[in-house]
Length: 344
Image (cartoon, rainbow, N blue to C red; front, side, top):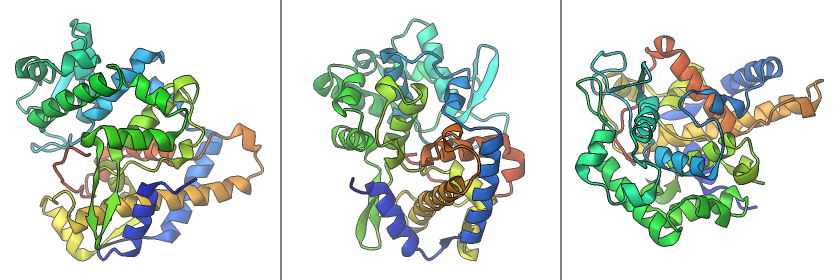
């Protein structure tokens, strides 16, 4: 099987970085800690369906819900500040949601209001006013990049209608249970998923939203039916801005003094800039090293291998993302890189 171009890119970036590095001693320590935690409390695909905003029953309609959510799964950090009362917030079923979960709440709220928000025939042709209302806020701050989200819905909706009979289910079926094939179909069919740029004289790929789209389908279906992929371990960590924060907090990522000062000053990093690419690429490679160390620990464990959950980059990413959200106060002193982009 060919190497995932994202993983190959991450390796190249890690070997040519100037301001970001990976501390292998920290990788080994965290790998031991996480493996022991997973032996006691397995971290599995079940965590996906346990969230009240995620669909609890996997169906073909669920595939189209996941597609819309991951099509729009980008740039939720707030100009008002993470803990500001003005931050973009959606109140749904009496609960306030921010960030990614606010997006999920928007989609579910629209469906409850009778809008076919997961049908390409609707969002490809809906007016600006209709789509803007779907993302309405319960605070003064509006969802970031609203115009871009509307554009992406229309563009992706038209692709689904023209190439996949109006549903992403047909794209999933065309991949024939191969994550690598599905990734290729996504980035070839939908320009809005082509998360790639130039670094050190060559193209590099990240494909954050395309990969998390595959991962969410796998997790929702618990690796069965439409969610069965024989090569699911082909998928890497999803290079965003939240998981690198966890990796830096845990000591896996090391930033140069200049980069740290840049982030501390809340100065933005342009998408595709050298520093931004180094953070994302090293994050992917650090999680791959973490996975490899945990696989070694698993092979040496006295526990029955059949009783342990899979160890792949998807579940490690889910864990690290949850860790950042659950420990937001502890991580508030670790700067997050600020990049406004449709890709993450």
